[in-house]
Figure (tube, rainbow, N blue to C red):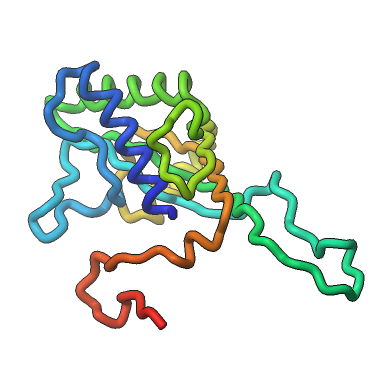
Length: 194
């Protein structure tokens, strides 16, 4: 679910960037800032990086109580929606002559999310079916906290913004039934059915 959310946001950002800058390749990738290369497949140089810096339960969601006020009666329990708040960083990893291009691209993306702060199935029909809504809000991070974040990530500072992303998954059961292989070489981490 988290991977689907970040990949979807990248897809939307790339869709917005292609016509605006006459691009033929994706400029936005899901990647932590310290990764320079992954098995020769993905370079993060001259790209906009999108990554998760924090995850918490949405403080504005109401936890599900026991139906019927907690009486000792049998009731059918349904899956409650899952409300999460993600801190998502959008960072321009451009250097040298490309630095100002990175700032132009970053500015475009800030304007894109300012115009499209909420993505749902009405205004974004290609939103993954198991995600009901994604709401984006830019956060203001004090300088000392920002410095601490980049130190924790083991990276030099990159021009960036942190967005508070509220994610609503209407049926948390769908998360448990996801299938597919993990992109890892450690066979003990692959999902086992049964």
